[in-house]
Image (cartoon, rainbow, N blue to C red; front, side, top):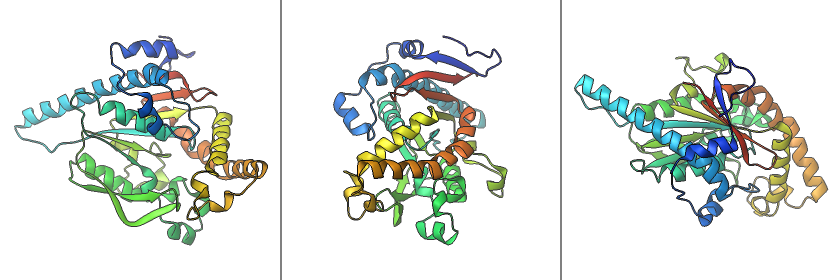
Length: 315
């Protein structure tokens, strides 16, 4: 284990090999076929990456989850009463195109294979985006993904309900194909053992956006992660993904982005770069990146999309 350059840092830094050793004897429970279904477009997640990075992480989280459940049992014993089952909440933040969704899916798959964590669910904050109609009415369609584009009160109510042990809490369904909320459709979250919440701004805590109770989404998480990378690398991954989507999701005539399907390579690269520079990069620099050091654990990726360093906040 190596410590960062500043002795006063509240994080412990681990290079890849150091972190991999913390796997101990945790068995590899995923196969190459599993990875095919879990990895995102143009992401290069290998079984070695799972073994070196995500198995130690799942072991750490399982230990935290077990300790949390132990505290709940102790509190119930002290109070002499049964308490509602409360899921362990994991928040996962980071930029567009950095690989949050793949990380979330990997953690869900690994944690679900630990004894006693059979029900692990995953939701994204995309479902709490305001519908396109609302964004257009407010003149902020060009700021989709920025904090003000979300129904933050609905998100906080959902998290509060889950943490209160509510049954069948609902999350609106978001369609990446139509780029909008699907009217009348919901994902139901019914007291899982673990709930992973993935989103751009889940660590954001801006007083101007506070609810009347001055609560933030980050108040409800038991453990938080941030997927980090150099901004130039994330831009390159975003452009690569945009180019790949022309032949997949964009090719569907019902896709909101179908107009980009026929672009040449040069035109598509220029369009993706412009969108990145006008929307995604400002959101990253203004709202997302400043929340990085609020996370309990930071996964720092190198140019090849593989995690090269892990930072774990000291207890």
